Each structure stands twice: as structure tokens, then as C-alpha cells.
Length: 295
Image 1 (cartoon, rainbow, N blue to C red):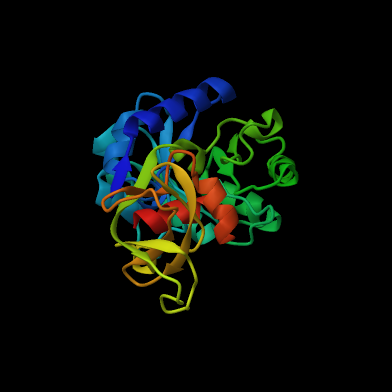
Image 2 (cartoon, rainbow, N blue to C red):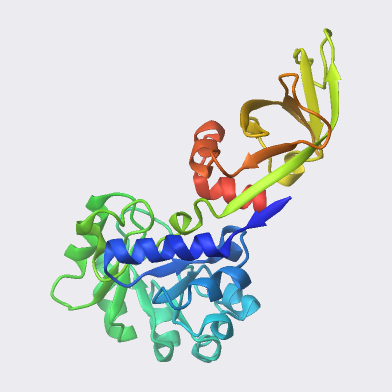
């Protein structure tokens, strides 16, 4: 079972806006990290300055403009066959990196994505002036994970009086990195998701169990597995910390203590078990945890 709290997303957005004191562009790509852009966007439309998606198609499929009536930035590469009119109809501004894109999409008020270390869908410093001239852009951004990348963006764009943004969730609390705006993603969604599954079977045994032959004095079974994005790690059983013992395609084994019963709740994300903790266990990012469990 998946429970989403748009109210928590709104509270997160309000707290971010109060803290950073610059415009907030909420990242709602990948269907708002799996939470559902149709629920998230209206909940925060009056709090944020705009929204970021990966592609024009995402904004079109979500009908994002009509959901929230706020500016939309497409941060990924524009489709080769997309014209300025396509972006204008959807009220989306494209991110560009080449002179060809600049000329083709100039009428859509594009923004320039600058290379500062990502080496993906970016405009190098050597080509920046040409892209700016061809596009007439007044805004530039970069994907930054370190303050040095923010400083590099400022160096490359120096003297142009541009609207600049670089900071996502990991850098927005550093005043030096806020620039003209911030683009939080995962920070908007922390605490807003709960993923649970009930215990459907319980077993006591002394012999090895499961495909892997794990040993546990007592275990339960839930109907959620790697098909649903679940991986090995911690869980909560009636609020108590336990471990996932083995994961199958559509079911998993859960460690039990002896006090549980059929139908009791196993929390796989939510409450005291946040995406950041699971990310450490899964050796990935919190964004990947969220998208995996909400797909």
C-alpha cells in the first residue's frame, strides 16, 4: 500500500521557501518522483515560482500548465523534432546547449545549460558565448553537486546579468549556492510517502528457508518483492525495527520477534524509516529509493 501526503509536500515547500528566500522551482520530473504530479503540483502551486520537468513530453502528458499555471522548465535535452511552437503551446521553456538548438528554439525563450562538471546535456564554456548570442537567452543554469561547480557557472556567465540557478536539494542550504533561484527535488518529498504491506503468513522453524536458505527462528511473508522495487535492508514491523531476510519477485521474507500476527503492518518506507536511510543501505540515492518503491 502506498500513501502520499500532498500536505507534507506543501509544508516542505513552504519551509524551503522561507529558508532560502529566493524563488523555488520545484522538480517534478518522473511524475514527481513517483508521488504523482497531478497531486503534487496543485498542492504547492502558490508556494513555488515554477516547476522543473525533464522533458516537454512530461509536461504535456501531465498537462502541467493547466494543473498549476506556473512557469515550467524542461531541463533535459529538447527533442530533435520539437519546434518552438510545441514548447510555447505547453508553456514550457527548453534547456539548450548548442547553436542549432538556440536558433530553432529561440522563440520559446530558452535557458542555457552550462557545463561545470556533469558532462551530460551541457554547453561548454568555449561555446557559451555563441549559444547565448544565437538564443537571446537571459537565463542559465547548471547541474551542481559541489560549490566549485556553482562558482564555475558564475565565472562562465560573468558580466552578462543573467538569472542563474544551480542548487538542488543538496546545495540549497548554502547561501553561496542559491544565486537567483533553487531547484529542490527530493527535499520536497521527504516524509510525504509511506509504503507498507501486511504480513500474510508467519512461520516458526529451525531449518533453512527460502531460496537462499536463510535462518531465522520466526519469519513473516509480505506480498511485495523486487518487481515492486524492494531491496534488502531494514523495515518496521508495527513500528519496531526488523530486517528483510530475502526478496523474491512478488513476495519477501521479514524477520519477526514473536509478538506479531497475521495482518500486522510492515513499513518499507515512511515514519522513522526514511529514504535517506534506505539509500545508505541500498547504496544509491534517495531519489532512486523513492522512484523504485513508487513505480
